[in-house]
Image 1 (cartoon, rainbow, N blue to C red):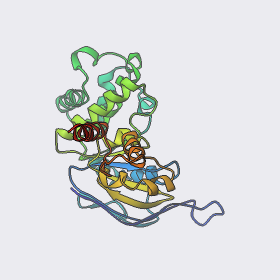
Image 2: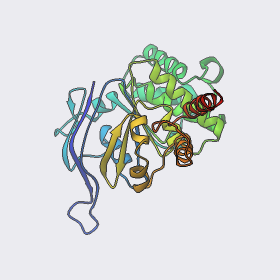
Image 3: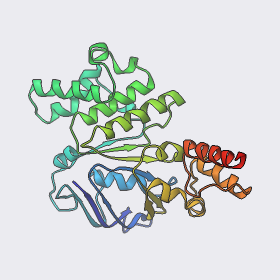
Length: 286
């Protein structure tokens, strides 16, 4: 179920003195099963872009097709769009409102008019997907959980709709290091299970470098770069010119090369840098 974005432009408040172009002529294809890391500084257009994929905002110009459904056609069913594409907002736990975890996760499926047995099955499966034990916390208030657990509940509520595409907007924002690692591992497991295309908006190079199969880099409403993490992080000067960095491991490798160490130019994980340094040391000993 590829996502096709063709010449997408979005202008806020068009025709007024406050008109602002948030996206300009964006062209992008996302294939089934990819885990896309969407990068960009504040105001780059990345959030506006993903909101188009869920039908939250309408294109000013251009075309978006998801699983054969043209989101820019007049009269398109937003319910059908949101069955296909699930969007988890930044700080989604602020949107929890039901008295128990199970009821909160069941809210979306219930609105689809599903039978009680099917709703229960979806709630249990979604909780399993995000690593929450049904028997332990299904009847607990979501507001009695930790921040990381609340975020998992919010994500489970979207997964219970059984989307084919899951969009996560800054999924680790505001969490402590342990909570961030837990959420990132959950995202990795969700994607590894197969059958789900994941688009993750992030400003953390270190988080995204360990997860994404492909990166999409936005700046000033335009798509400026796309490729594998290795390809993108080799473009250090370009990334810095648009206000973005590269993973700390890639920065370290770059600094060591500047000092004369003969290291490959495409290193971007700590494991790779460690292995390269050890191999260099071993070579010098011999």
